[in-house]
Length: 314
Image 1: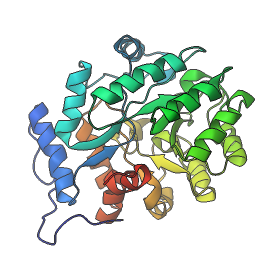
Image 2: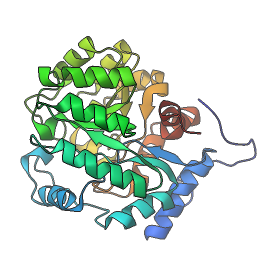
Image 3: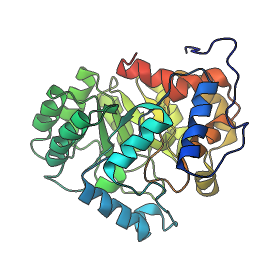
């Protein structure tokens, strides 16, 4: 864990009062990482996808569908693509992802084709790709890796598939061999699915223990089970997406008895936010992590250094 701060740099964090407005929020975010002596943030869980697909995602949240657990979920950053990307840069997010995912066969390759163009026109984007259990998946996963994909996204809940499906086995093996990380929504939050929970993804890891798996949302709400997977498999990481926020703590609180285990995995926890699909300001995720009291070294690692090392960023 690297301390980028000079001894004279004060820790501001959330000490100064927030001011309403987007410019002021950007200032608050920057105060946070500047106070830690970081060059910015790296967010491994942000969503960019074709606009008509994203509009459908937002409509689903608006309708309080079953996959949201029926919870009211206002979209804080409902804006056009360029405005959203610019806002992340205003926040000082040095690198971010375009988490996109299919819910049916034949969709993943099309999304991957779109993602090539998005990464090319969007400074700071880590070229993201996805997959689905279907004939030909190994072929288009290889094509995406060859095209420069830096990270993959799999959404077991929305896709309603078993990640241990034999159709995916060769693709998981390919990604493990290529050392390309995969962010997987495999926990049962905000609502359980047929193949969510630690069991199905655990079977994938048993076959491919070297897979660079990033468990989204810390595996919410099966936090302790997914901490166990990370303790067992050295290449398993966890992202903080929505964890510890007031919103999530009201619904699926993280057990405080597990905080020492989370602290011990400090080199394998990565900042994630779910931007733009979050029902609160971006800065709240940062303050939620800070108030855990795990220390500045842990925060620096989580908010920047761990992801910089994983993705080979300066």
